[in-house]
Image 1 (cartoon, rainbow, N blue to C red):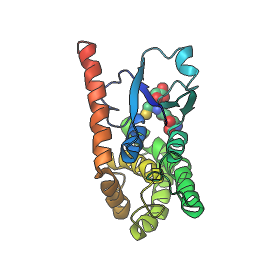
Image 2 (cartoon, helix red, strand yellow):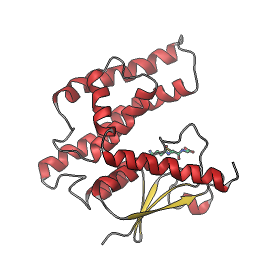
Image 3 (cartoon, rainbow, N blue to C red):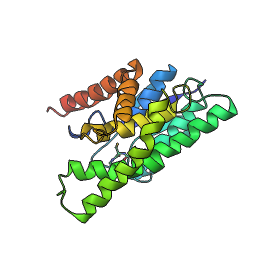
Length: 217
Ligand SMILES: N[C@@H](CCC(=O)N[C@@H](CS)C(=O)NCC(=O)O)C(=O)O
């Protein structure tokens, strides 16, 4: 029987709420119906106890008994090993889902993160640097669009690959980055329309709202 604890920050400022990557883990846990608890680590003090679990001082990490795992992709693959609602159990399906886990993180998020950070920071859009970042994301979306137009979920059935890909894409969607990618946009709507996403999102918002209260804000 797994003994799962998800660790996230005790508080974050409002802008990233609803997007902190513990949401990916909450979403997977809710999809699988696995029991878990949520614990907090101080946002304002990323000391040795934090770095021992997450060497970059980030969240999330997950403990399963005496196993501690960081990186949302690694965490979701671990959870996939606990539930075939998250990762197909046949070798072909598992390989397909795994390649899309890395595709979401290493091919799409690699392009979408600098793009969304530039949007968030309101960097000027008339520079060569911006054009590079914008073209990089557009190229990835151009390749992803026919894939998502042709299938409901990346690996046949819904899997952790969809949690990661949809979470990566919805951040860009928040800045209208999917305006020319209707299949990507429809996929994000399809994925985030699942009850497990709604529960994960509401729970994260409630976690940080309770933190405001505890801080007297
Ligand atoms: N590649 C890591 C990224 C984790 C990450 O960026 N976490 C953010 C919250 S969503 C964070 O802790 N940011 C604070 C920081 O980087 O100092 C993963 O997927 O787990």
